[in-house]
Amino acid sequence: MKNVSSVVLATLLAVNASANPFEGFDIVDLTHAFDANTIYWPTEKDFKHTESFAGETEGGWYYSAFSVQTAEHGGTHLDAPIHFAEGRWSADQIPTANLFSAAVVIDVKAKAASNPDYQLSVDDILAWEQQRGEIPKGATVLMNTGFSMRWPDRLEYLGTAERGPEAVRSLHFPGFSKASAEFLVHERDISAVGLDTASIDYGQSTDFIVHRLLYEQNILGFENVANLDALPPVGAWLIALPMKIANGSGAPLRIVGLVPASR
Ligand SMILES: [Zn+2]
Image (cartoon, rainbow, N blue to C red; front, side, top):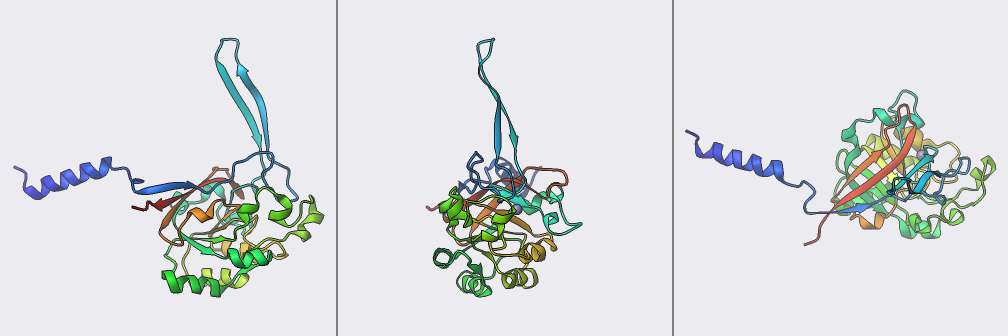
């Protein structure tokens, strides 16, 4: 004969097994669509989506299929740590658990609007923590610069519409500072950073020190993220699923936020 607590437990387990874990959340898309206007680094080729067939078949039904060609680093994408740190994770080696994280959003839109070379400071992080508490362990720290509003205008978004290696020195967009990266590595325990510009180092960087410091620690990077205004400063969750490219230094990324629904 079962005792009451085992019956209660069995009932609870049955309820949990059938419950939708996403209930109570609004799911927001933080991804730019990939098309001919998708912004890539000035040295990379544009995204190509080539029709193999689209139309009515001889059998009378509709059929469509395309092929795609893309650089790893363009559009909304993952930077795998191996991008700037030998021996660290490639896209396929990242533990899946690291692709699910708490989202912390630091808003620097006002500063970035008047200064396209703005770099996130340690003071920005500390001011955020003053209001919201310490950055949770395993979080993704997202910098909201407001630059996604400029997408896909290359001149507005990158600071230059020119292409090729010569254009790199004309890049102007915000990023993380070296000091902020050092702070996040040494003083906090995060799983990823992300932002709504083309690179976690600001456009004028020549040493890519933020990439080097973070990726050495197997911290992930999410670049060209969209729609960050849809996330609260804290309390949302991220699901960031890149294409699983073997030995990939990065990959196209579908990233969504789970925002607690307002009641
Ligand atoms: Zn990248």
